[in-house]
Length: 350
Image (cartoon, rainbow, N blue to C red; front, side):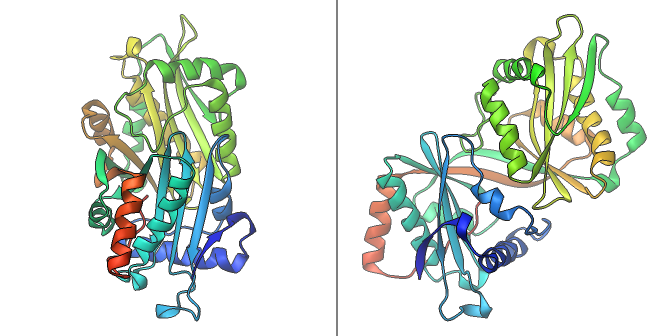
C-alpha cells in the first residue's frame, strides 16, 4: 500500500521502521559508511529553508513484508527553486519487485501537478541506483568525487604547521555554531565573488546574507552543528576565504565538509590549506567522538583535490547528479505500468 506521509505526524514506531530501512540500504550499498542514528531524524526530513517544501510517500507492507520489513520503501521530493529533488529508499529485501518504479512514478506525478518541469536526483556511484535511474531516462549532469579523511591517520603536528602556514596579512578565525552577525555580509560577499559556476544544482550554496542566516538556523533545527573557519584580510577587514564543516546528529562520527572558498584576489597565499588544517585541529577538541570527515569535489577542481590529498583525504566514490523532464518521465512510467506491473526496483540516492 502506498500513502502520502506527513513526516511531522509520523509515529515513533514509523520513524524507527524508516531508520531500519535506511540503515539496511546503507549496509548493502555503502558498507563503509556509519549507520544513521534516530536523533533528529524527523527534523532532518521536515525542517526546511524558506520557500522549500518536502512531500513524502511511504510503501507499507500489510502484513509485514519480506524479512519482517514494515517499511519496504519511501520516496520524498524536495521542491527547491525550479526543480524537484528526489530521494528514494527501497529495502534490499524488496528490490527488483517494481516498488522503486512505483515510488518514483508517485512522486513524479505530484511534481508534474505542482508545475515543475525537471526532477533531479543524487546517485551514488557503483550502486544499483545508477542503472535504475538510467533505465528511467535520467541523464547524468554533474560528477563529483567523494573523499574521506580518517582522523586516526592524521599527523597532528604536521597539521599544526600547515594551519600556521598562511601568509602574513591574514587572520584565521574559528567560529563554532555559526557566525557573528556583523560578519554575515562580508561572508556572503566572499561566497558570491568566488562562486563556482560548475557547482551542482541539487545542493546550491547561499550567497545572500539573509539566506545565509536562514541556512544556519535551518541546520541547527535539523540537529546539524556548523563549524566555520574564515580568513580575514587585515588591511581591508574583508573575508578572503572560508571553509565550512557540519557535524550531523544523525551520523555524529562522520562530519560533512561544505563549501571551501578563497576569493580570487587572495589566492596563492596558502589560505585554503591553512583554513582546512585549522578546522581539523578545532574539530579534534570540539567533537571528540568524530572519526572521519567526508568531502565532495568536482573532478576538474584539481587545486582543491590536491589540497585534500595533502591533508590525507582518500577518494572513495563518485557522486552523480541526474535529471529528467518530468512530463517525459511520467509518460514513460505510465506506459510501462500498463504493459507490466513489475520491473527493477529503485534505490536510495543521496
